[in-house]
Length: 193
Image 1 (cartoon, rainbow, N blue to C red):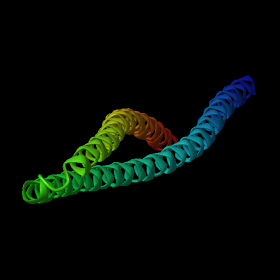
Image 2 (cartoon, rainbow, N blue to C red):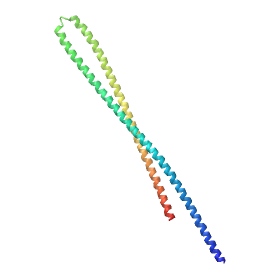
Image 3 (cartoon, helix red, strand yellow):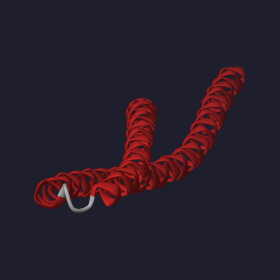
Image 4 (cartoon, rainbow, N blue to C red):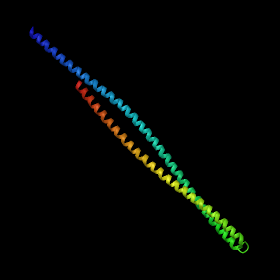
């Protein structure tokens, strides 16, 4: 009878030991599930952040496109102003030639008018020169604005590159964490089997 009791006690001890191991394994599985849930939540959060960064990148691309359009418009305005300036200069030269021929023919008859005409021409020339200076100043301002816009474009492109690198680093970390979790889960599954 005592041998039987001893065997029964031994079986009970083994049963308790097995139950303890089972409870420990279940706790470990529960911890891993909680960790997996936390990682999935973190993954969702990171996906949201990645989507936000992607939207921001699209906004920056649109800003770059708008800036490039502005640069193109400034360049068109500059070329147009230069063409106008050349046309004005050509007109001035043409008028000057015409006046000189006219004065040559009628110099003796209209000596007094010649002086008045020269005064008028000088005033017109001064006015035109002032206008040309203003046009050149406007062109210089447009050039300065274009340089500023190009600088902004370069800064935006640098920021885009930084965001892209950051995005890649985040995705790499996520992949590593998911692989680690998957490996642990497989090990537990193998141990449970």
